[in-house]
Image 1 (cartoon, rainbow, N blue to C red):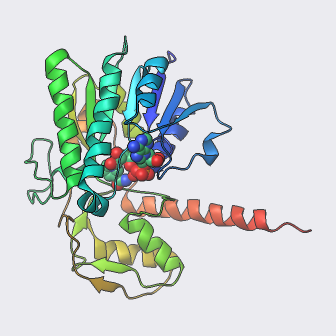
Image 2 (cartoon, rainbow, N blue to C red):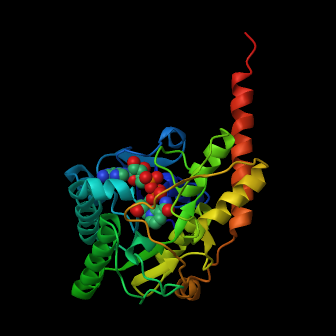
Image 3 (cartoon, helix red, strand yellow):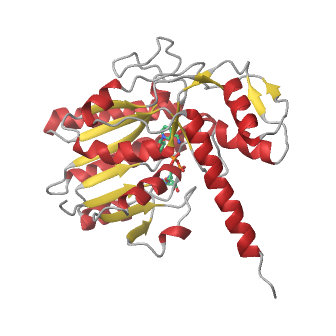
Length: 319
Ligand SMILES: NC(=O)c1ccc[n+]([C@@H]2O[C@H](COP(=O)([O-])OP(=O)(O)OC[C@H]3O[C@@H](n4cnc5c(N)ncnc54)[C@H](O)[C@@H]3O)[C@@H](O)[C@H]2O)c1
């Protein structure tokens, strides 16, 4: 395997950390840009990873990219919270659109640059109800966040058409795993509340569905995407839909805790049902998800049990 330079923006985040773990198993050189707004860098310190703490919108980021001259960029840094994208539309567009442009334009100046892998989202499809959604399905974002991802895809496509800029935009379904940040996804929220014996909140009827994909599967897909020959958009998903009520039941069963949910009105910007066909990405890479929702939740339980055990051992010091 020839050693290449990988730059991961947002490498300290939830998905980025898993991508770094996978890359550490390869001989490739690893570089990270992160402003640590939601990321955690503590575990990176003793690893062979070069971390530049800066904002993707800054000239520092641009200069760093030119210095590193990466072969591949996996661009994950973003404002990822949908309610924030509604309340602070300027901020969302600034980070997600202008920040992405800053990184992409820097990559265009790098000689021998090979591919830009962009973290897009199922949010670009909005409330399109013709499931499973395919890459050519109609785009109708319901939030500024979804809109920002769709606009970035269009910039990438435009630059590919203008001068052959090589890219892959991966539209992730709902990613779950061992999230540490405050702003969490539905699975992490349910999990934490079950553990604390607090009734989890279900917005709307709970019959709305999502396509839940385990973070390890996403990290593997992001690295495989560098070898895709055809620039364009690809769904990365399980092609299965599960209702929020079922997720609630499954987590309760797994943790052997019985609670009734608190039911609240649906949230603005939330889509009703979501399921993405992963056929195109599977055909291009040979990838397929290793985890079902059940095996992913079991793996999550294993990780959390190890963490608890580790925390108990560390605090178990005799003075
Ligand atoms: N988690 C999901 O379910 C999901 C689904 C679809 C798409 N995505 C996309 O995947 C990517 C990663 O998501 P995540 O869940 O790991 O989010 P995350 O918030 O855990 O990670 C984002 C990382 O980017 C960094 N960051 C944010 N703004 C920055 C800026 N202006 N400059 C430099 N660094 C910055 C943060 O500190 C953090 O480390 C995002 O682009 C997100 O939109 C995530």
